Image (cartoon, rainbow, N blue to C red; front, side):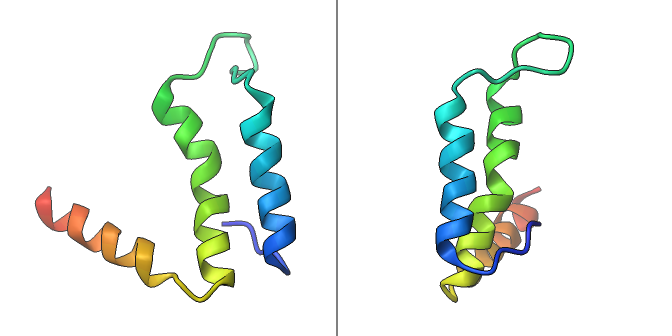
Length: 68
């Protein structure tokens, strides 16, 4: 996970990813939906951490892991 100093930097990175809209592997093949989600997940979690809301994703992970 990226360690941002503030929410603005984390959001700036996230917005850059979202606005790219050209999600491709290095070989030029398009990324699938899950791969695109993987690109933004760390930034979303970092923002939650910076805001003191890590419980939002930690609880979700625990719930998903218990269903498997």
